[in-house]
Length: 311
Image 1 (cartoon, one colour):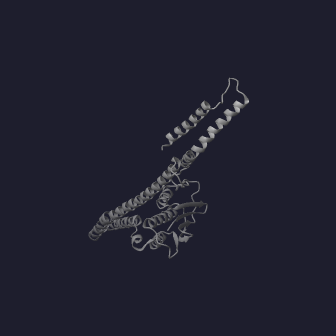
Image 2 (cartoon, rainbow, N blue to C red; image 1 turned 45 degrees about the vertical axis):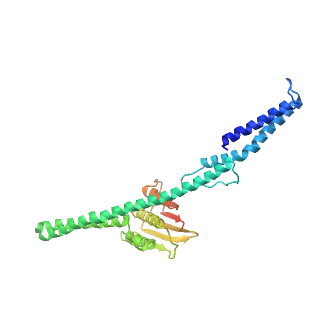
Image 3 (cartoon, helix red, strand yellow; image 1 turned 90 degrees about the vertical axis):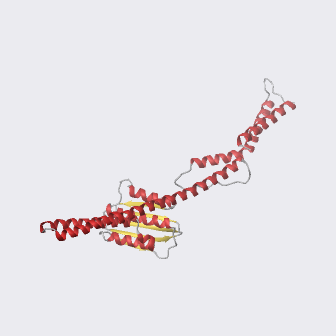
């Protein structure tokens, strides 16, 4: 029965019972009520209110619980379930419906996160492929052409052509490096450990000492979780190299309790009072995609990025 009609019929039944009692009983109320009559009215009113409370509380109390849960719901966090009660009352049905709606929303959110991550990685892969196949090949053709021109050019043009050829070679190396960062093939071919080790080696060539500490024998992770861990490590190390003035970065991947923890610590100048940039915002968004817990701690002597995920 709908809650509206239940309330109407319950109150109607209570008032009918009260009216019937007044009609059939000798009880009356005079123009100047006696104390006994006032007591009878108070008792009757108490009975009416008590009957309503007893009958309606099981249903309306559940409604109040759902309303409070709605007000405290945080879309970015997993919502707590309400305790379900047996029965077919509207309140019990509402609680079960609320819990079922949360289950469906979280299942859809998990699916949406996986699809969003897959779309991001697919787009990165496409851009990396185009950089390698189109831009890279075009620069290679230019490089070969400049070499031929240099071999047959007058002596006064050789130095200029050689400098232009070296600039083109540097541009080609940059394109290949960007393509590798967009979609590292080692992550697909050899896994997360090898990809993080390759990242440490690549960043160390730029003058930043990256020391990896990768615990072997970790449990298998979902492909999307491995991608997020690698991207967060990549962003954290890149930020340390570009913005913090750090000379050393510790890159750790280990198991702590029931979770896998990635931690990147540098010895730079920290974030200070500056607001989080797009890099940290992007790391937080990626962590949400796999239900990870990302924390960024910064002091005057370094920054620590920590991401914990479930295996």
